[in-house]
Amino acid sequence: MDYVNILLGLLFIWILVLGVFVSLGRSKRLAPGPFPLPIIGNLHLLGDKPHISLTQLAKNYGPIMNLKLGQINTVVISSSVLAREVTQKQDLAFSNRFVPDSLRACNHSDCSVIFLPVNSNSRWRTLRKIMNSNIFSSNKLNANKHLRSEKVQELIDYCHKSGQNCVAVDIGRAAFRTSLNLLSNTIFSTDLTDPFSDSAKEFKDLVWNIMAEAGKPNLADYFPLLQRIDPQGIRHRMTKHFTEVLQLMSGLIDERLKERKMRNHANVDVLDALLNISQDSPEEIDRNHIKQMCLDLFAAGTDTTSNTLEWAMAELLKNPHTLEKAQEELAQVIGRGKLIEEDDVAQLPYLRCIVKETLRIHPPVPFLIPRKVEEDVELCGYIVPKDSQVLVNVWAIGRDFGLWENPLDFKPERFWESEIDVRGRDFELIPFGAGRRICPGLPLAIRMVPVVLGSLLNTFNWKLHGGIAPKDLDMEEKFGITLAKAQPLLTVPIPL
Image 1: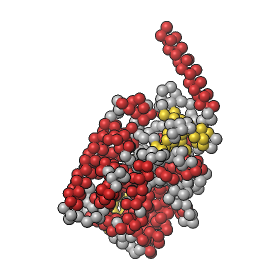
Image 2 (image 1 turned 90 degrees about the vertical axis):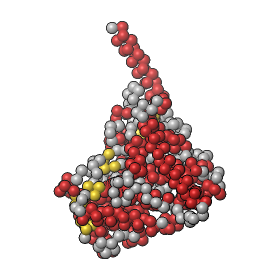
Image 3 (image 1 turned 45 degrees about the vertical axis):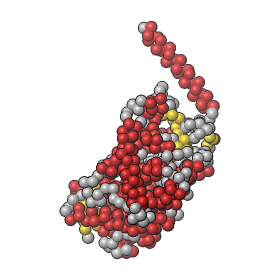
Image 4 (image 1 turned 135 degrees about the vertical axis):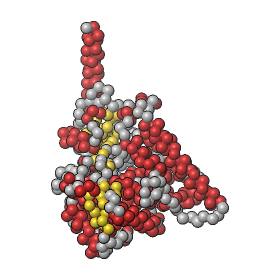
């Protein structure tokens, strides 16, 4: 009985202490939010699909919501108006990153354009400028247009072979191989996976494993004291995956340096450009930065693109009337059976509407990449406390009934007379983010996705594998650092 009384007394004291802290916090005008439980805070409210759970909570607590996830104060933004405040009007105050423990493996976050701090950090500006100038500028993208055409042709050839053999295509896996080899050819002038099968899949699996580990809920992120022991082994496994990728990058760099030394290699790709900068201005970028930048590019530029293409195909197959309209436009403008060229996209408004609608309802990264404030910041009358994690729920914004008519319906026509675009200026639709932290790969993505999607639609008819009716297609999501389709889209291409 004495033990019971002691426990009850300790619980009473804890409640009093918590009440004091909560009242002090509220005196700081914290945003509304659910009351935190002992130790875990509000972690129990996240579930296995946090983007949906937090969207539902926002209906009760509002578009700016304060939660305690373990020891981490977290502010969730669920409206386009507040997203504009965070990513544009007060961009600098919200521009730093909350770094997941898994991405500290191999000191990656200390060299990554994605995670390096912006404030007073010349390294971030230097690497971002190098990336924009040497990979994603209009001139560089135009110069590499032929590579993208080759990779799209390989995807179509793979689908054609599958169709002839009546074999279903896993759209996500096929699109992933295409995205991976496009990047590897742009950077290294070589394929890093077999474009026609999974027989040479080691590198592809490495990238997938990295994305899987990065997307797992990690206790060390919510309880920083646990980072030393890595209780789930996530950082340990990520270190193994990162090491393998970085060793591969190192081998490719060594091979290139040897070729350059023998003077039998022309400056043709991104690696040459980066090595030139490294030799001329070693203070700007060194060998380690080159390897880590390549890791960023492969991790961020493959899963996001392939998921978007898979979701687009799934929505079109679930909505046959929309698919028919898209194919009619392609037949009239391009001619049935032809690949789409990048210059054709400007003449295909309905195809562009389909891409926008896919990104609205299935944003590649549902919370963007978490931000962090380095000091107390006032936001719309509330205080975002120092060291808070800030999540912008673009999934919720894309399904906001106050912004979109029938937002749960896949309806590309909603963009037909609309000027809304995905380039970070229209905060109803920011799948790539906005402001300083906007995704550097946006210029490549908005070229690549419509070309691949349009080519798939224009060169084949498609039917769902296993005789599934369109209305019965499973559209469940699988939450991670990217938002994937829970069940792979298997569909049979029917050659024209």
